[in-house]
Length: 76
Image 1 (cartoon, rainbow, N blue to C red):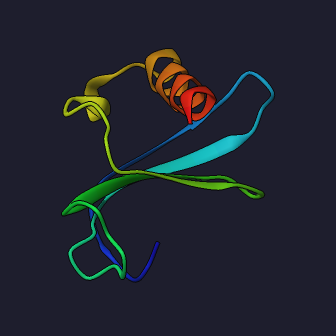
Image 2 (cartoon, rainbow, N blue to C red):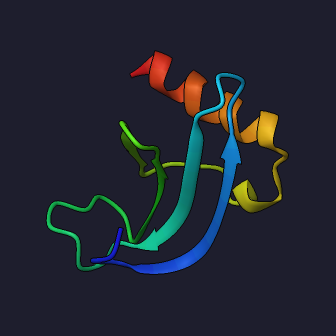
C-alpha cells in the first residue's frame, strides 16, 4: 500500500481472527486505475482492491464493512 497516498485507514478482525488492514488510497498514479481512489483490504495472505465502495465506509461498523467485502467478492 506504500505506492499510493493513504486517505483513511482502519483495521479490524473477522470471525476467524484474521487481521484486516483497510485503507482508502489515492489511486491517480496507479497503473491501470479505473478510479481516482480505491479501497484496499489487506491481510497476511490476501489483498483485495475495490474501485466501487460505500462513500461512508469509514463509518460502517466492523460487521458492515466485512459484509461489504464478502458480498462484493461473491458477485465478481
